[in-house]
Image 1 (cartoon, rainbow, N blue to C red):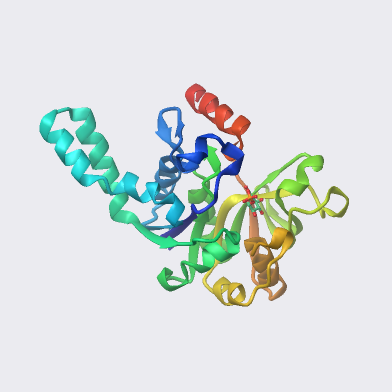
Image 2: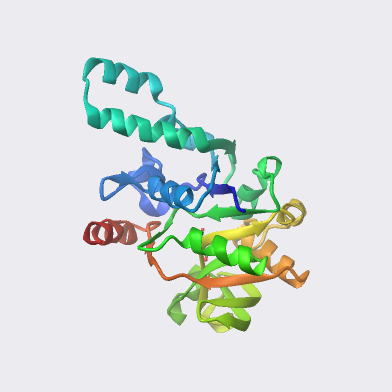
Length: 271
Ligand code: G1P
């Protein structure tokens, strides 16, 4: 079973400036609820028991959101409001599951993953990228089922417009397992249109094997000088690790850009 999830949260959020000059993007409300809570609810519903947040000193406001006990206690004492009590109970439930590690320099997703090395207990763990919301179907839950059935690593995937391939990790598949799942042959981080092996993109849900840490320890920076998780995954694939691309059935919402962020509120309000 997959019991642990990790969430990289140390990103600067420059695409959402000026909002992110004072607030962590993951705390920005989407239809009245911080984006990170959608991600936490997806984890809990998928049976995850422990969630590791990778934050930075600059993003300690995220820790504060879950550790504001004295504030809640005072307010609840003053105003006996059942809504506030309920919200506090929810925060306490999340808090019990969360551990924090720090990535103070934004050196890439692979580097963020490496910070959790000493906390991962089982052979596989889940990673969720908080900019990517998937609604209407629990993508992590479906991926955990695939992982159990095929004893493999898994990544969420989606077909994208060819002209946008340089925004994503792009993969080529070896063979189709069934309608929604394929075995990956190659994956490359943000290729140019002319070099892209397909228009199938990796979306921010991954079930990764613990052995990825050993690769990350020695990995040289890739595109843009960052340590990419995609490069470590490609190495694992070449070392015969089975990676399945799961074409999820929920609706994808990109909350990492201003346009996508605004749209996600509209979509969730409508759903
Ligand atoms: C990251 C990954 C990329 C993936 C994308 C999904 O990129 O590096 O492979 O396709 O998430 O959202 P980022 O969004 O951090 O640029």
